[in-house]
Image 1 (tube, rainbow over the protein chains, first blue to last red):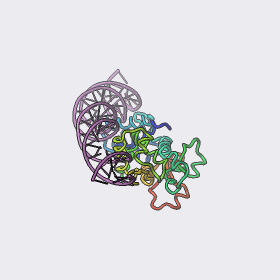
Image 2: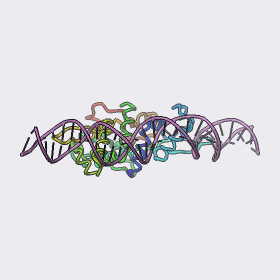
Image 3: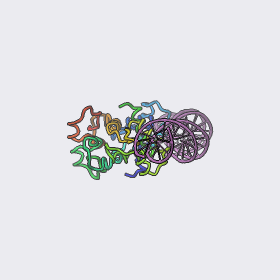
Image 4: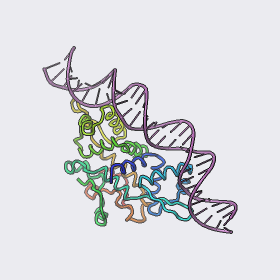
Length: 124
Length: 124
DNA sequence: CTGACATTTCTATGATTATGGAATAATCGA
DNA sequence: TCGATTATTCCATAATCATAGAAATGTCAG
């Protein structure tokens, strides 16, 4: 994960409407939701929603697929995890006080087993 | 963790200089670094650095303490974890496909034992 | 092909943010 | 107290971003 990608992701999430959209899609899971359904749920004007969806998509946080006349959006969990991993990289210089930094973000043991290429995480 | 706090945190991190500062402080751990040391490491003008440090502090991501003439800054890991937790709340409607959302951010088993008031995390 | 629907792109406006020079404030050794 | 050190606040300028109306695009049913 490169810094500019992380910056784009954080900038995308640092806006109330987009944060609402993202959380709605996290909740929706892999099935996702249509643009119209999101617009209705959040009471946002279509043009405004489209602007934000485009922003989130360019940041790589969500992906789009077409289903008939609707465009369905869903979150890209890998990208999200990459951003979190970037923030905790080299935590405490990879040593020092474990109390302070262990919680930041470590995969669960089950997840670690099935994981392909995990980004470096702070386990200190 | 309230939405406005999460937004402030994300907005603070969504800026290159501040992201650099934050990561430097994550690496430094609980000991932290002085403003001057940060300015030198990142080659940022004092007024500009101060602006960004103030921003990060107001967002609650870093804390300040005085040590003689220097102001020492260090990260607030709890706040960081709260933000990550907020992003993954209600992941996949608390059920559904575990493959998709498990990795987002779950505390390690050891951390879970010693934890006081953990924010809700996505373990699906 | 036509009309209805779902969503995006275009465009203009108003609002927020980053930068760094200069001045100010806090701390400390002599 | 004086001067040096460390860092912040003030200020003006330049740049970026959010919003939503109107027009355009893509999809489909009949």
